[in-house]
Image 1 (cartoon, rainbow, N blue to C red):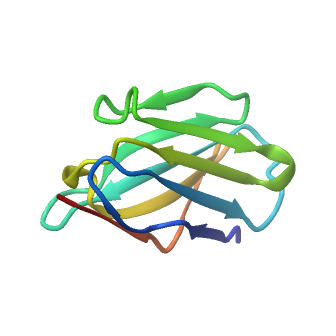
Image 2 (cartoon, rainbow, N blue to C red):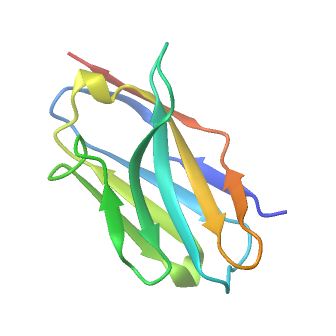
Length: 118
């Protein structure tokens, strides 16, 4: 069972920056994707950004131009750099790992709170 450990959330003023990290407990040698999703109060969980094991990225329109997702495969870690934060970015951010193959496996982190004040 892969564990995902998230860190880096907190309280920041609008226009500020935060960097989230998500570390997997073991090396994933199969084709996979890691990414971040967020859930605001009263809303459904939504995609923020994902990055494949080969490095290709996918961003939600709301994240494009402000957020950058990167990964360090040697450390089994992904990083979400969030700049120019807005109050609407507030929510619980969850890390997700998807492992592809004959069977698909999905793992979620415990979530980290991001609060952007106006």
